[in-house]
Image (cartoon, rainbow, N blue to C red; front, side, top):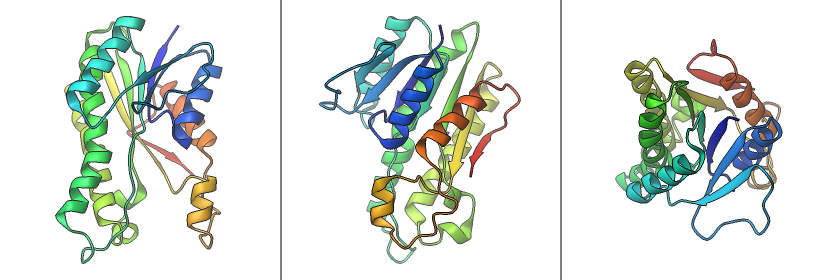
Length: 220
């Protein structure tokens, strides 16, 4: 049976991904922040508390998961944050916040997982969460810290792919998630291109199942 690690498993996309992969027969290692373990758990889903801002603590939790399952075939690194702001409104503190939430949390998990997958006969798959403002300057001009931080994940995936022909790294990109929180915070937004967390999770699962899929997993 294949095993997937899903970070940010308590968020909207994380919960959808846990459900999609568990339903597809994967063993799921769901990473949640310390103190956020669910009160009830389902068969095939194991929860691990992990502070992904702490590199040492993250490595220890990844090692626990490896020791528990033996091997990890895929990891969805979904933890991240959002912050709006033009160049004029974006100071270095904002850059540090977004870099920590979007890059460091992903790298802290990806580094030990990449090394583990390199040693596995079957290799492995890593999926990061990108953003269109990282690729489109027009969309990112008022999301400077967010867009810059997300752009680093595309380069990280490229670096990892260049370093290994056994581990494939990809970046999922979508416009906005159709969630109650986003609907409430953006009541006047055009939701025609919004996508549900379930759809994004399904597209990730399909991409992982296809060896021909490219660097970017585009949804919506």
